[in-house]
Amino acid sequence: MLWKKLVKGALSLFGLIGVAVGLLVLYPWLAINEDYASDFSNPYNASFSVTNEGYVPLLDLSATCTAGFEMLNPGSPRGLPLKTTTTYEHFAPQLKYKHRASIPCDHNVLANGHLIKPGATLTIQISYRLPVLKIRRHQEFHFWTQLWWDNTYHWKYDN
Image (cartoon, rainbow, N blue to C red; front, top):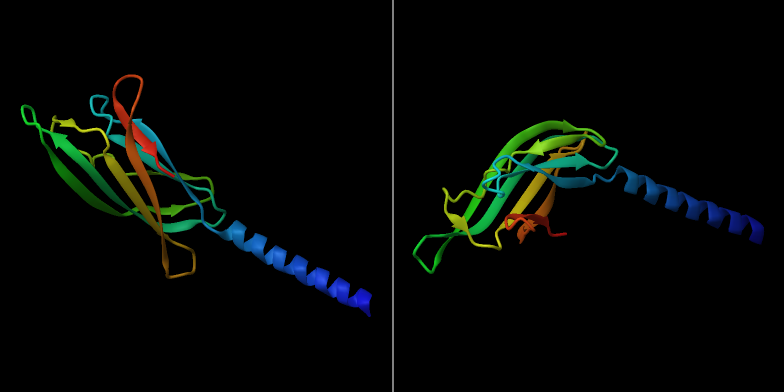
């Protein structure tokens, strides 16, 4: 009797572990990367891409890009704080496992030739739909500027 209960308990435990691993494998994971600067005179114009690290294909991807920065005016000790938000609906219809898509957030920090104070921030929110389900899921990525060796500022991922 005790032997049967132990076997039944062990099978139940393995079943629960199998379900947990299965759900973890099906859970969507996104990775974001800075690709390149399209305008080398303005390193804030960097392009980003998103990669689907999960096994389930993602559908109907949209991005909302929010940048916060301070534009410095020549001859003025104070800067002008600015915030821009742009939404790009349906920038990718589908994103399969290990596939990449470019995110069109490369023009959110725009100061019309004026200098930008260090410490600019960028938040990219990616929303997508899972197959069969009607609900949308969101994932946010936060960046801030960092001074590089060449005395220019570039985006640094803040995880």
